[in-house]
Image 1 (cartoon, rainbow, N blue to C red):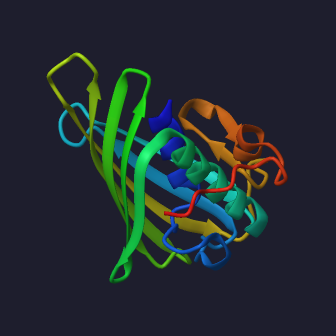
Image 2: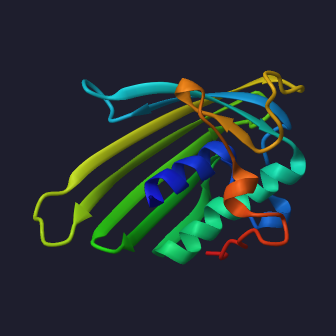
Length: 178
């Protein structure tokens, strides 16, 4: 579940290196996000569409990093030149995950995200290596296809809205500052 929340949060709001009031958020509008999980043979590639406005973008960031703050024993966010680097170590129940995420791009027209990590179930000696990449591309200032701010259209037509997951702005989780 944490991996899904992290992916949704990162797909929704990729620039997270500064305090929330100073974040360089994505340009409002319609974005197409191509994701590849697994890396290499056997990996899965799919495309998401999302619609955002300034308020929803901020809420997506709050929700995604609020989840990290509650679920992870450690997460560090820093700038490395033009890139944003996020390192996390999380244990939920019997599963421990570590991840290093690197976000690049201008967030006005495009961005890329690479998440490398491990997953280990306690009591089992093997670590599962994970790799997820994302390429976000700004499509239009207007959202089409009936998408409203906060909507994420998944493959197969399933739609979720980050506002439904996070609650209203007053109920949204506030991220812990690293």
